[in-house]
Image 1 (spheres, helix red, strand yellow):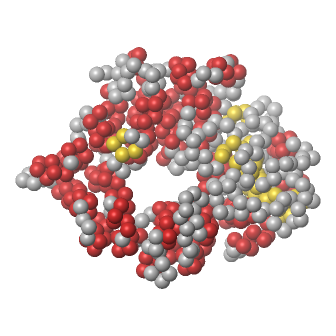
Image 2 (cartoon, helix red, strand yellow; image 1 turned 135 degrees about the horizontal axis):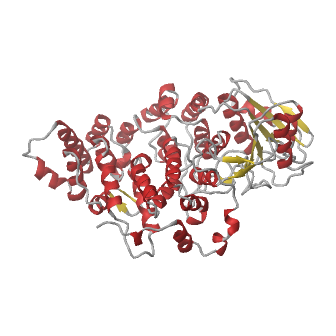
Image 3 (tube, one colour; image 1 turned 90 degrees about the vertical axis):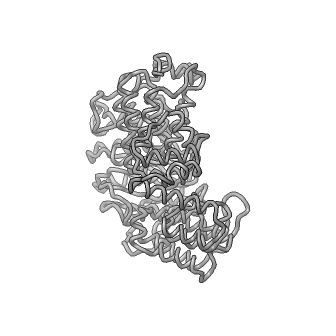
Length: 570
């Protein structure tokens, strides 16, 4: 049945349905400066006041903030995993209402494919919204982009769930012809072996399963191999055996059959040696095993050889607590070798801050929640320390002039929320990241008493950098000092990053005014990022200047946010 017009919802209808606040529809809501619909090179509009003025926040910029970190506002909150909601998508709705849906879809694809988003949920929500818009071209663009944005089954399941939530209260369902085709294409356009691995690794999420999607989409397999996988998912292994045992099959089908047979054999095997051999031979992953298998050291030894390093970092404490990692064991040696391997770190594209967070948590000896405790292994800590320094080569430079300024007016002994990092160590690691990845970075320590440039060399340790950036005596906080220093010293700075844990600031002049003065003097389109390492939201006064951004706390996603801002992407 063709999806009827009454099942399609315009942006105006969405606002009425999902927002009870009358302010959502007020004329004041649309006072942001709009770009011409053809503009794709910049996400801001420079005010007519000239180079020292401000960028007014356009709907496009608000959209890109939403796609990056799930909020259109100018505050990024680290580790925030709240559910995406319509209340945070006002600019998205406004752009759709103006007929710029195709442009919105292109931005969704860019943030998803270039891995610029802190998390993919907002992009999937936006894609679901576009796929249900009243304009045909927008819907077509959204469905066409599904395969490019949803790279894994978990993404597809979340997209479908968002569509279901957006249709709540409507009389029609979501499974119109366009969605059925898009979902069918998602399965049919996958490489057969990749699809077989995906459906056995991630069978269901968000209340949806592959069986649900294939049934509701009325999927007609495009190849014999996809037909085999579809039958396996919907009918089970016994039906597959009956249908294919006496059949002459293509090489691709034989290959997929053999792989599925291995997965089924593992499911029903209690033999540790057999399971371990199958893992190593067929590159099986933890999600394809039974819970009982994960009690075996032999099985873990096989898994650890190819387990993604990001996954290893997350479970170091648990494996040590369960005695799977013990001093001098072969499993411990496997992990140490991988973390000290240049090629393994490069392949994983692992960020040094990720390693530091995991190392400090592991050193702590217990999780942040629950009762799990462990005694950290010295050889693993040494390997993580080595990996931290080696992984700086994985940080992609953006080619801008940064000033990273550390506020030492208060003690930096407090802890960054949600981590085991002291604010001093966190500040040192952040400065090291920019100093080593960007060729033009000034590092400053400042308090009310003055500003002191820090001399960092590539071979300095984290402890040495920490000592270098906290060398000034304590005083009151004036976050404008680094900007004033740059202006007085003739620096033309692209991005100022202020690191502080003091919520009480004493300004000689406001940071916005000081930044405007630097813009006017230097001719640079300077931006300011205020990082409150222990705060719940350090806000800068002028929220309508697109060059201003606040970060509450700090995590790996904060680096994405800063790099996106530096490149005018948000």
